[in-house]
Length: 276
Image 1 (cartoon, rainbow, N blue to C red):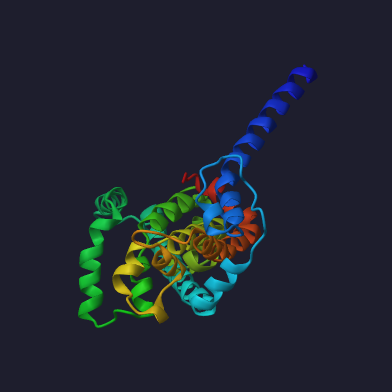
Image 2: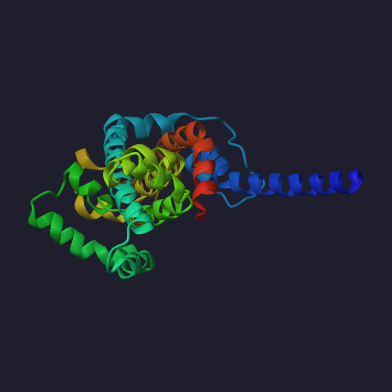
């Protein structure tokens, strides 16, 4: 019995390691390409993996061309702004849909689910017109605007609040707590893991958002990393070492974010019962 279990464990670990290696191949290719010359980066020989000479010119070039300090700051403002808005709106709406009884609750939540099923590109034109009407183009607010309300976060927090025992709310009411106090001091702390998971998801979605920043920001000083990287892509030719070097520098914040919050990320997904 133990022998069969050991064989199963070995097969499972082998499969997981194989999948992990496959997932790492694009990242390793990006890192190695950033140290190659232009001619080496465009060669089709699959056996030439490592650069013949490890060059740093691509990193020096992109650092001189692009103000990474400003790009990191713009991206940080974008991510933090969307996280704050998403958590604030999703917790209140999620709690209302999960715990409060009111007319039209099921219909309202169906509209939330319907919005999740619709491609986000449909909302770009009306959102652009709204931002343009209030004269907020080329600003940090324009970057945050689509994330003022998170439908995904509403669904995620609703699932989290539904999994909490009702007895805790009843005990809070017996002790004299109103709805607001029950939400703030009893239910909200218990949904901490799901809130952290929502923050990580929101930061990931905001970090990789490309079309919206390109639409509402034509000014270099307000561009986030994703839009600035898109500007490096030429119409006919591209300097792949520079493009990969810039992409490698741009990926550092998300790698650090995942390393720091990976435990909370997994706990949030497990407790909310959601899938990505």
